Image (cartoon, rainbow, N blue to C red):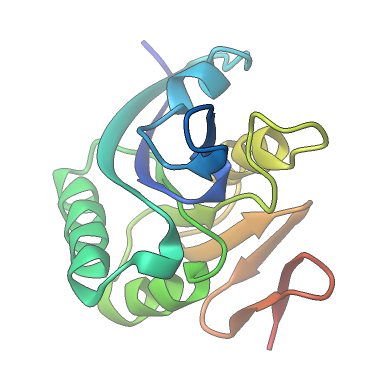
Length: 170
């Protein structure tokens, strides 16, 4: 039996964008999480996936954020997860993180992560950030965090630093 059980909630964002040959655009067409997970070795870990949304976070609504909150709340209430990772677009990740921080009393780490460059692109940070987020569920205490680029930042007060292409504390 796995020592850890992690739940991943997919919502889209740059981390999961793929190239659409017909339009020439990067779009969210569905989760590519399973492809990314297939490149990782996760000893003694089971992963369950909730495919919730497939949206660029710039187009997320309050109703979308409520769906994310409800999915996280239900997962935590079930008591069967060591942690939650939420794949999210970086543009509004902090808005969702603040909502989760204000609304949840988590009994496990809730980690938001994304990517500045899609998984499919050269020099993408997607796989690194996913790996760090998965690892963080096993080492961080309960709370809501943004994990990316080698750092774990606790909400409230996380902001996107567009100039540096990462997240910082306010």
